[in-house]
Image 1: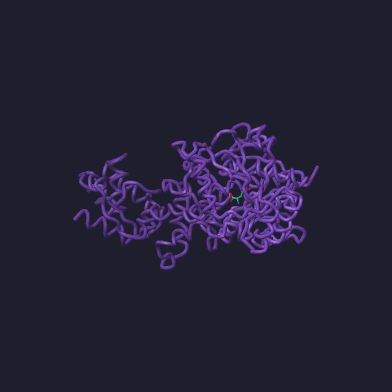
Image 2 (image 1 turned 90 degrees about the vertical axis):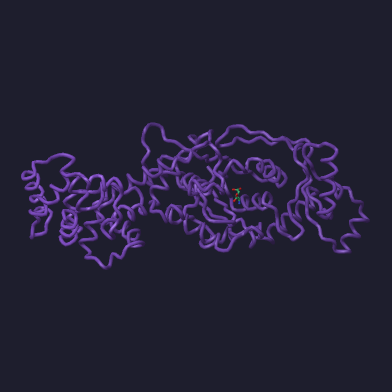
Length: 479
Ligand code: GLU
């Protein structure tokens, strides 16, 4: 079998989007599953759309996810380099000339105004779709010569065969067929000497010995154009697969303008999602494993990934599921790992260095079971870092006579030796002396001492808030 080489070919027109990351991940999984190469090629020929830092950002977040290219502009294999299309212009030129010489392509001198007028005429005449008139295909030799002498700018068009059929076995969809008669003579090289996407991709996929092209379904209509070129050059085409869309909870295609879902990998990192959870979650966006199992490590996914289980229907981006998964991964960490992960999020909003380290660790660890993603820590630990306003819910509890009794009794028993154990004893004494139990007792003390209706283990909370704060709060409250 031919060596498996799969490429992910982003255009550096933006940051790493969920859809692209999923494509990269599946490309990576196929490559690694078959012990092949995962190749990163930068398709930067759409120069107006390239953004500064786009390539770096793509790479940075792929690496963060654990999707490490075997070959890339930064890690070139001399046999296939360079890996940025704008550095390969000479190569495209050579193959364009070959097609011209073989009569598969021709120079087109039409200006964009002429083309627009022509397309408008076709529309006015009622054609559903417009196509190039082939005017320049039929230029006589003399005119051609004259244009050459004048050095008129030209693009290069492919002479699309009239009656060819392109059939391929799509890895995801099965047999797909297109006919050449539906395709007009298209531009392979623009006037500025830059190739069009469909042309450059074929030259690169061939020269880089790509075996599988797995990409988003928006590219399926490009495939016949690419197959056409493979056939003209007499090259063997790779296998193609077109993955279905990712949709939101309303079954609408994820649109970059939709702000209801975070769509960039950087945003998930910022919110404190783990790379391993993202990796796992994205692998299930359009691929499934038989049975119930949903949590897979990086290496397990490489092992079990199988292109025959790519889904034919759109996959829903379910943020709740991602959050659930992240939560599972977080809970599984050792205390040390968990603290190392969470502290940077906590210190974004609070000055941890002002506190004793053991105190900080103990405080954060109160939330280990609960925390679903890093940034959530800010709200959770707020009560330990600032005095928050009482909510209506808290005021209601404070208005109860029983709360006054609990607070006063606890105050009378307040230990001088400030430990969780001693606080438990004080609490037991309060229970006995006040004769209260259940909600009035627990909720009463919680609200009077922490000013919150909900929170982690009560005695640990009191301990961490400190004797001074608790004593003052209770004293102020009982008056
Ligand atoms: N540069 C293309 C894109 O970003 C890649 C298309 C392909 O994989 O062939 O959509």
